[in-house]
Length: 264
Image (cartoon, rainbow, N blue to C red; front, side, top):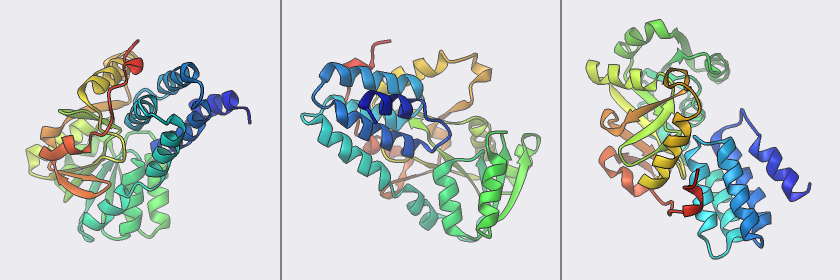
């Protein structure tokens, strides 16, 4: 496949987990290593198609600022493919705990399948929640799909709310819709809130601000499919190396500032 055609295919991909799309995007970008102008155009196109993927911004910034863009792209692709966040979460969760999740967060879903025990309550946001229910039931997990009207009761009856960060900044993160409500309810009821932060999803302030600006421009605030959740509502964070204190979120930021990504 011609590099441009591969890029178009990857840029328009939808439905696959963030890590898969960004890993494939990195490999597609490696073909532009000897074309600096083309590389900038390609990274901006990828971000335009996937503006809320924190790891897409991370990957683009790393490639654009690398001395060897082609090698860096392959290295980042491998980092994404080797992301151990789901395994670390499965190890950290109490095997008997009843966990509440929102929608179908891919890394959290994989972790719960690996855990293979305990009960799972899924807040039905209408975005593939039933698919997660079928997936976990096929792995022998006890699952209940909960309508959003029952979110408060579900939070009261769970041991922990587990959310998946789509993208993160120093003070807050972007999560699936209804995550902010779940986290706020959990804080009110004294239930722990956990958050996974996969490879590349934490961003420095300037990249985070650029991501949020693009996200807010997508639709009316109440129509957007994601929520901003302050880190102050999160009790435990699980990253690729395992659990860390929420106060240590900045240690997960490894993206440089690439000015090319800051232009509208």
